[in-house]
Length: 87
Image (tube, one colour):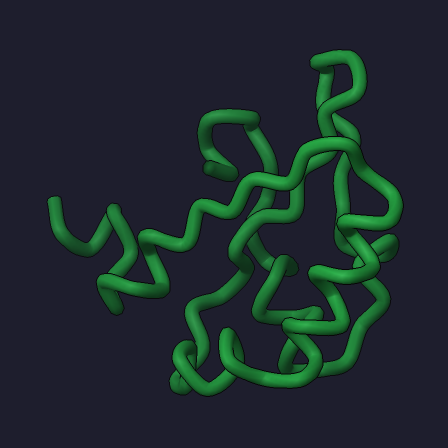
């Protein structure tokens, strides 16, 4: 998703979950009005563990309280390889 919006992916969901970073520090406003994106960030060695963590549950609650619609695109994490590595 980061390439779609022309964003860097050096920080993202993995950064938030692995380092207990505040999501506001990682979320990026896009050129599209009212669209904020949190990229995946670097693929962690333990994606399933992070996605099932209390930090993830807390993050989802925080995001749900501030935004009208929350979409998750976690294909990279679920498949275990980045799209660029598959090509």
